[in-house]
Length: 359
Image (tube, rainbow, N blue to C red; front, top):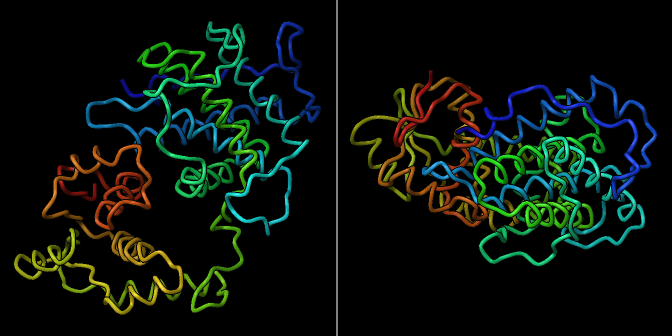
């Protein structure tokens, strides 16, 4: 059963005040946080992000690792809370920031999560918080990897729904409750109190770990030893991508190494081949070469190319092998598969075996 379809129903009304029986009492007094309109936005944003997590972590057998999905949503909620506190932007990513404000704010997010769970019949606060997790439930990704891979998509969704960072954090707790409900009551593949502990730990990790700059907010990035404005770097990357795409036809051929070029030259199609010296220059300047391949795919998708084919590999097997692992550690051709898996549908493409076809 699709996790997102399971929860396609109206969001439950959030409490205006915490019950005296609740162990955690929110001190938020901004009434806009509890307006029906804001609740609806947080719920819809959460549902959209849950779908992204499902596409990213769902294995071909229809299952996802509960600890990985729960911790990912919780860490991003915590990261959004971190940003809501308006720290200086010069804190090095990955640095742990000890904060009285976080200590006061993160229990309020857990209180909201506990409220949702209780509405669905589970009192997650009936036992002490679990802090030691069974080996099979531990997430393989750390908080820095989660922030690096997901924070931009997460914040893009929140921004589209008109949610600021604090509301983005609260929307993240809605997502946590949706995922929790599925894994604890439908899939039943994790103990509810272990799941709650993973969520609590994830929120704290996200809220106390300085994240890397968001792409949309970063004023500069390293290139040739100096800072280039994002718009400049984007232009450079796009130019490299355009000059690295060769061939002709109505399909883009992707694959490991030279296999895509060989296939395109033999049977027709476009292919991406970045000059080794360009790759070396990107590496020297601490620029991820994947940005070039991503830009090349975007250019072809924007031109509505009919089909994108992978050759020399089984897409589903590779997606399964890399499910739950850090994307930035995967080979380029696998990262391209993961990118298409996560994004192609947005542009009107559907996966068909080793191909993505324009609907």
